[in-house]
Image (cartoon, rainbow, N blue to C red; front, side):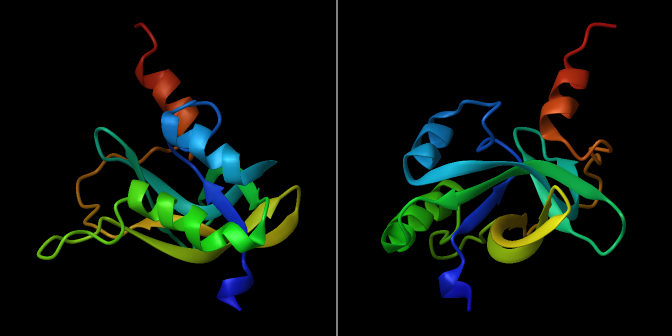
Length: 143
């Protein structure tokens, strides 16, 4: 049952490598289980990465987290939903949706929440490595 899922997969600004203010919030409620992957594709949306699910053999590299206290799930995930722009104001569309997906960590499958992009990906560059951190490092590498 989805109400019993207390794991979260992150691939962008919520990853530990970015050390954003939102990451600091995340670590108050969740603990890092480690690096993991999910079947999907990453795109460069300009100021932030976006991900879509796929059945193809493309994987997104990210981190798997688990909630410290299941009683705090509604509050903790609600704050992250706000950060990801779910629940957009009336007349506006949310760019992301939170769904459960199969996440792989060291060959073990986990069910976890992920924020998938819910907008148009036409014309967006694909992040071929499937890893936002590597992509950003390559993008800023001197020629």
